[in-house]
Structures are given as structure tokens and as C-alpha cells.
Image (tube, rainbow, N blue to C red; front, side, top):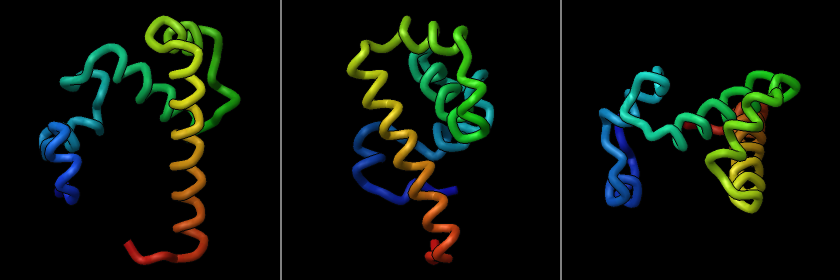
Length: 91
């Protein structure tokens, strides 16, 4: 995978970081980032499995406003991915 956007590179996103997402629990991510990635995975796989333990982890790392913003961003990207698939939008 290649890092395609200059803005991402300016923010410190490297090819190695992108590659590490496949095993983020052992990757070079902060606990805050790992919790956010765990949440995103759970929301994508089955939002009914966002349990009290994960919610407590989120609340330990993010404020109420940040949790809402993160939830909204995750939902938007999940929906966008589904729309791109259904409409067969070229990558």
C-alpha cells in the first residue's frame, strides 16, 4: 500500500505506519490510538458488540465531545465504504 496523500505524509503518516494497521495492537500506536482503532473495528464488524469494557476504555481516553466526533467519523467512513462498493465506484 502506498501513502497517497501529501497531507497525510505531512502529518507523519508513513508507509510503515499504514502497514502496521494490520496488527495495530502490537504496532507503534499510542493506547489512545489503539482504543480508537479497536472501536472502529468493532463498529465495522458488529456494532452490537461495543460492550461496557470497550466503552470504558473509550471514556478513559476521550472526552464526551471527542467520543461523539470519533463515533460520527467512524460511521461516515463505514457508510462511505458501503456506498462505494454498492455503486461500484472505481478505486
